[in-house]
Image 1: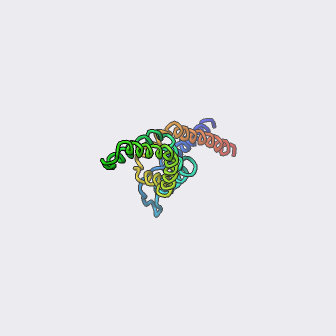
Image 2: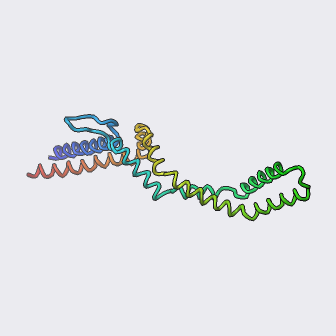
Image 3: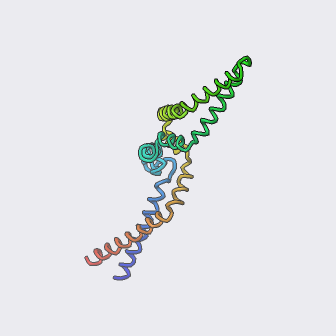
Length: 197
């Protein structure tokens, strides 16, 4: 009786383990649909790649990062003083070059001083306004969701499979072993029921 019980447990463990091995493989394989007895068989991820891409794109845009946050962070980390000084240098250079030679030096210095003062008074406000316009323009023109969808759709399935398998190798092995353990326990339970009848 013990030998029969052990045999049923081993068979159950093998079936449970193999079932989970095949289930994990069927996440990706076959990559392209194949017909088996009138049924189309294709891996879950290849079959639903477009839906998965859309879902990931929308989740990232809604829950993780938005265009506004990216542009805000970019503007926040930009040295505004450096930009203002760069703009000041260019404007003063243009004013100096475009001013007629006949303008007396005193008048020239007054005009350059006035332009410099106007830049000091208005540059920060103008930078803030330009930042707001840039954020508004970026949110209208750029969709993180669509960018992510496009990148996922372009990503080769074989490479995606390799990456996922490498990242989750340990967890997937545990799932396979768990199938064996559950199959083993079911085998023992079946054996106890069958042998006690």
